[in-house]
View 1 (cartoon, rainbow, N blue to C red):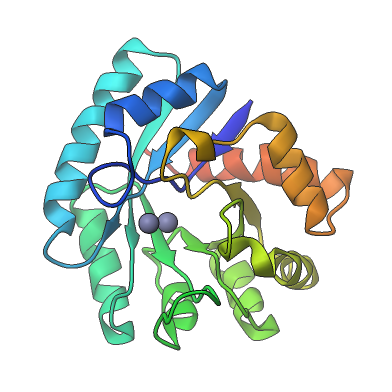
View 2 (cartoon, rainbow, N blue to C red):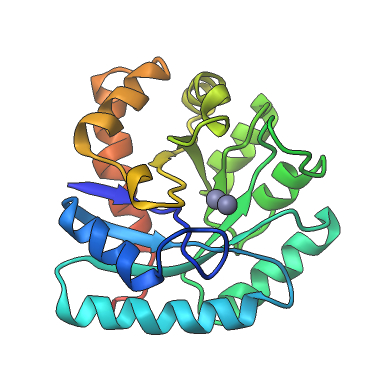
Length: 221
Ligand SMILES: [Zn+2]
Ligand SMILES: [Zn+2]
């Protein structure tokens, strides 16, 4: 089974419509997929509303847990906490903050602001994470991401080792922008092992941690 908590659709810069991405994921043997389109204040309300609707439709007819979420992307650092809170109020069940990947000029302090917010569930592609930040993720129960995405994945090894030292929980996500980016079981295993992690950690990341995140979601899902 594959779990994936970070994907994009035509509601932001992804290629497929939300329902087609979910369909493709179901065919790829996904157990769960979160739709987390890029947003900032202004676009967020519409995206969350439409994502909630399409995820509900997919869940009622197909055997896949489609989860409405959002990825807060390139926000001013000072606006992250308030916007994450608002996203949860609007019904986003998974709030991702687009972390300080080394291939984009994300504002410095984004990782720290995300890891201090009780409304953030996952820090995506954190780039040059520090041990202190990994420790904060562990204490606050915020997941750190191992990324399957080209460029963002350059620091996977660092994220993996710091998370292990700090006891922070990792998730592997596709950050898919099209159907070719979706995960398979063998690709997921290879990326995790490629970050220097062993079989035990791989099982944790692919099975235990996804279940822990799903358990935090409302029971009616
Ligand atoms: Zn994108
Ligand atoms: Zn993303």
